[in-house]
Every structure is written in structure tokens, then in C-alpha cells.
Image (cartoon, rainbow, N blue to C red; front, side):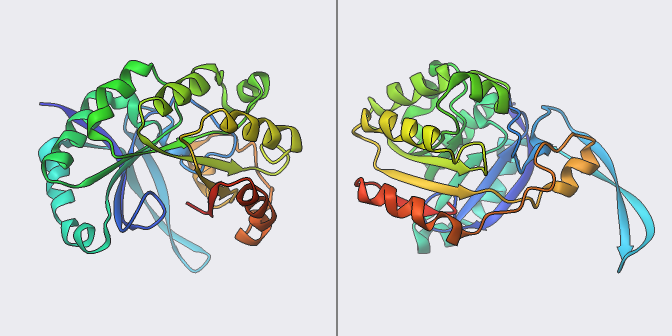
Length: 266
């Protein structure tokens, strides 16, 4: 039986596709983005961490927390069925995120097929860093792709994410040619992705892809700082202030003037 490793199920998600959604966060990711707010997704195995129990500022004990639970398709289907009434009323559905959901292709493919059998809207949030054959495997079962674009310069992309962007950009062009619906997700990271040369390069690249018209601007936030501490991972963005939606209004306006439908925060 196909099984998947999931580190979180987010119910009533409002920014991971249309309507009210259940977002399934899959373990495992080939990227190491400096600003990642889900560093618990990096490893593709379960982790057990010690967590402090506090009353106010006083530690009164500790407990063990397991990050990453094994789900069968049946177990996940049971969780999805609990949310169907909300999907039906809002035009929502299920979004697979991570990590990189294509890292667990067989499980995600089977789960997507289950959703389509139940007439549930499906969405995949992806870094694009996977063989294009993985996209082809799930094309028929995926209604919407949320496609992350970060840095257009390959050397910068390697420096801040650990991988080249060449396969990411090539996959986007090939995916766009299939006619599937795609929303670009652009994380706005102070001093890294928000530079003029990066944004200009992003706009030039998107101009060559006529079927992509929607962009979501994702403001950097530092709420994951405690996660990095607990996981023992160096936080490259420590001390950097979070951005607000207001900080992105000018960028939103500029992109809208170019004909794009632009949202902030998802």
C-alpha cells in the first residue's frame, strides 16, 4: 500500500488555492531556501524533538514531539472526507505542499487520483525542482499549480536555495504549454529576491509565458525562528524583520499595471 510522510494538515486554509482548503504538507525537500518557514520539511524521515512545556516564561517540564507521521491513502482520505462540506460550500479543495510534494510522487499521485474520483478540486504547490516526468504523471489529476519562483540568476539561486534554477524555469515553460492553470508564487525576501534586477528578470521571463497571468506575492516573515532553534538548523535570516502586506503594495501595483492579477499573501 502506498504511504506518505506528512508533517502537518492545515484545515480551513484560505491562501493555498481557491475556497476553503485542506493543505497537506509533505516531508522532504531538495531545496534549502534561507527563508523557508517550514524547515521541518527538509528531511524525508520522521524526527523526534524535545519541547519545553511552559507556564508563562517558566519551563515546567518537557515532552517529546514527533515531526512526520506516516499516512496511508485511506487514512488521508478519511481526513479529506471530514472537510468535503466546506469544499462544496466554498469552491475549495485539497492542496499538496511541503517541502516538495513531488518528492513523494507515488503517494501524491494516488492521493490526487482519489480527490478527482470524489470531484474535489486539487492543487499542487511546487518548487518546480523535479523531473518533468513527475509533472506529466499528475497532470490529469491536478487542477491548479502554485509554482514558486524565487531568483532568476542561476548563481544567486544556488547561493540562497542550494540548487540550480535551470530545471525550474524549463519545467515552468513546459508546464505552461500544457494549458494547465498556474499561479506564480513569489516570496519577497528583503535584500535577496526583492532587488530591481531580480524583479525585472522575473517580469521578462513571465512575459514570454502568455498563459500565466496570476502572481501571489508572499511577504517574508520570521515566525519560524523557534523552529530553526529546535531543529538545530542555522537560521540565515535571523534578526531580519518581517514584511507586512503594506510593504508589498507598491510592487503589487507595478505588476498589476503590466496586466497581471496580483494578490498578497497567497
